[in-house]
Image 1: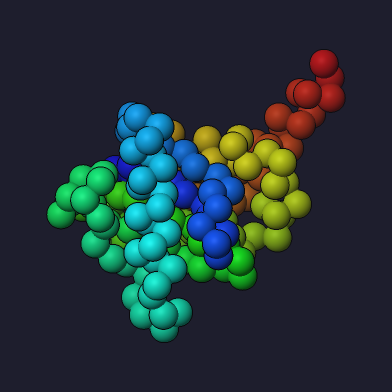
Image 2: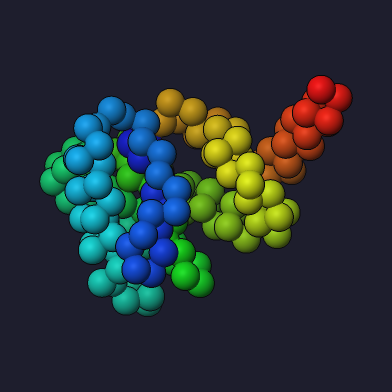
Length: 141
């Protein structure tokens, strides 16, 4: 299960945070800081999976991340998630040029991908179709 999705820049400033498990705000800040320190110190040539810190779930907790340009995309998951599946999800989202043009709808896109910590949809064409349908509905209002 996905515990959190974090996107932060090279300096550790959060750009997007979505927690699928309740944590007090101060603990969320600690998780973001600890996660940034864990992934930012790693060389780009090493594996994109690592054991998480102690804040979310102990030894059952894993970080799966990709570093694109100035952003880190990090999924905090438990052992029931497929590391390669999540890495593929990150890659397909980040490498889709259409997604970057829809950056203002990032929370809507994220809700189409993941709900309640479970991956719902990985087909980017389907997600973009849903976003376009939502845009049409908004224009009708």
